[in-house]
Length: 398
Ligand code: GDP
Image (tube, protein in one colour):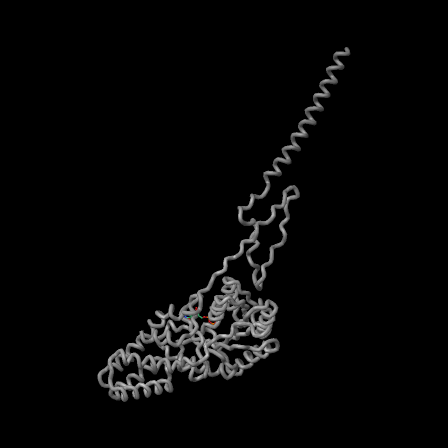
């Protein structure tokens, strides 16, 4: 073999090695390239791909972040976009709400005003006409005592002044109705801190009267007055009640203290709510309670315990009884039972938009000796109005 042949052999071997090494290098580069194309898509601007804002089920006023997400080692961790602040609703100012909602009252109660005016404006009022006036008032749920009072007062007016034109009669009727509804009663609601503690409002009533809805609406009334509110979902027999409070509360930035366990001790939840309100230095805590239609003893035990347990930490400043205005005499009986069990400081009459029985305002105040402080005039979140005597009477006479 010549020296040239040996040289050719060396060259061939070197070329072979070069081809193999080159191939391996190319393969490695491809591998890295493929890996890059496996990256997750870039999240859209304004938020991370992971929904950190979704509250975990059953959270009480706090948001938990989901577990950290593992990132590919080669990837740079993109700092999470700032959490979008949830836009809070601004509830309507409470003052003047009754005037806004007056049309709803007038629609159902104007029959009462119209028929009274028609009767009283008759040229001469005989016994039969007075009986008709009485019937009209009784049908509107004024109750016997208030009806007799009003008819006597009107009879005296007519006897003294003689028959009069419609405008004068209207004036008398307005004056007497305002007197009956009683503008001297204190209808203010406790909603500011008392000394160094939050005010405490307990809301009671039979289920179905609109109690939980009222608590949710009341939170908005206080928020509109720039108060810091905490809600306590002590109706632990209905998860839906706690859910409603939590959902409505979140819309206006109000935390709800609740139990995740159905049938948990309502007194314990009430206690925790008052404690949380104190820790948060809130202005007011509102506590919803269960109102199962039970016998008086059961009710007394349950509500009595809730109140006693709260009072270990804080006095209860306001006990609001929620009554459904459409239930008439039945509602009145419930009201009496509740007032014997817990001292009532104010009444919330709901569903006044669905009844022509506005006289219940007068009847219930007389029976319990406590004022109607708020009225419900619809299912919307701001359809709860502080009660205003003159606006109410004007709505009836419209
Ligand atoms: P609870 O069982 O006493 O807590 O009653 P809820 O708060 O669950 O209310 C019962 C029903 O009454 C719901 O459908 C409410 O929307 C409705 N409701 C509450 N207040 C009013 C009101 O003022 N007017 C009308 N029309 N409906 C109301």
